[in-house]
Length: 217
Image (cartoon, rainbow, N blue to C red):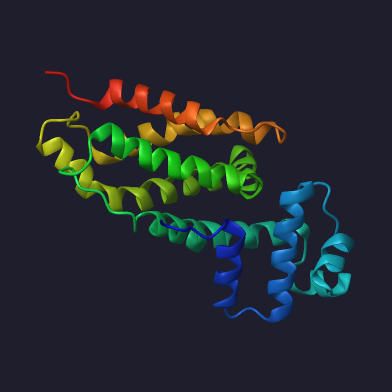
């Protein structure tokens, strides 16, 4: 069974391999934790300092504002964490000879919905920021789409060569899958107390995608 590290674990590992000092890493990790738990607006410098075990002066000696801390976190997520997580998912191998298209869809959709549900507070930080910042929105969309296209293109090409799915570009197919999946994720993101019914969501998404993408003779 493929085990994927949480976003927080992956972020901590990324920081560990960076050139940042221990105190800088503590500030960033503590900030991410607080932003996820109580929200960006409710997080104060004093709370960050207490969580990180440093003084407030230390917090702002590294990052001039709370906004600067968030930008540093988002930058690392967009440039390293998200591509690394998607790369981890791509380690799960598929072949068109062994899988039907619906089974293939069910596996990739389910794995990612489960991951998002388990990391929903960190994902919410990314999504909420993308709603108000077009640059982040475009970068996030491009990073996700292009990180996914490369590992699943071979299997999509096999299905297209066999005439099993429509001869759309792989980018169009990936964007279609993501857009539909996101429509199920957003209500959970907007309502912290709402859990996504994974099985029902996967069934509905796969049914809709199969109807749209499977080539009818």
